[in-house]
Length: 132
Image 1: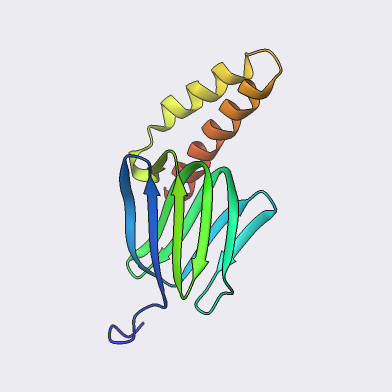
Image 2 (image 1 turned 90 degrees about the horizontal axis):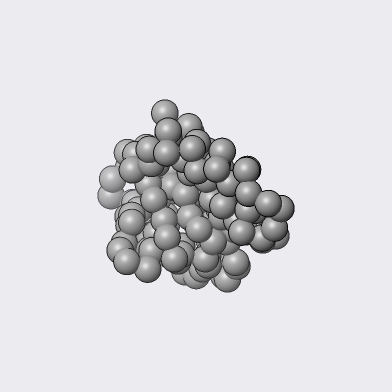
């Protein structure tokens, strides 16, 4: 991509305690409650609820993989905001810990807490595996 024209989107991945990643990108893929959404330059305005899942951001220097614990996806004027209580970049994920969390969650009694913990551990594992 030519450096003088940019990549088309300005993306901010923001958790409650920090900005996890911010920069230019050509595409963002995130999972909403309605399914996966791909965002390119010129995308229509959008506000959607995110699920616990992996997010992919196509930046000029490579794909950024992260796991988010739900939140919101906002798109307007080629600006994408991913707002979540907790997010972690793939390189920050300890895959062994995420697999242990998944195993522990699978041993819990059936219920909302079990399902949430399984989704979050699975999202971290997917993000880490995609980045490797």
